[in-house]
Image (cartoon, rainbow, N blue to C red; front, side):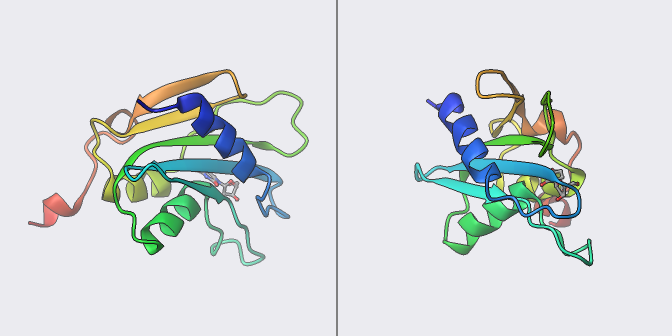
Length: 138
Ligand code: THU
């Protein structure tokens, strides 16, 4: 059983470390591995813009670089630093593709939260229909 609320809280913890001097848009992600570990990620921007890394990919690359390649769910939160109201923050296309590399489209859960109590649940398949994966290269 996935504790979605805990995962959302962890995403907010991760968001605190966002490095966003250019956009001031802070994103946090908490990725649950099948090993029970939660990998946190934040977005990390760069003056040259393109080296910027999204929160979701930070979490995935941390996990994979530590030997974990199987995952159950991710929670994502994002908002402008000075936002009075917060909204749901969906993963960008590049992050959806990275998620598709490692996760089952039908079972992997993506939780988007706009605060600690309100979140929506999606499968990867809902957010990335007809995805391109390694199977297409067989
Ligand atoms: N960002 C993420 O971290 N994740 C997403 O899926 C959407 C965008 C970041 C990248 C950049 O630092 C800022 O949000 C504005 O695009």
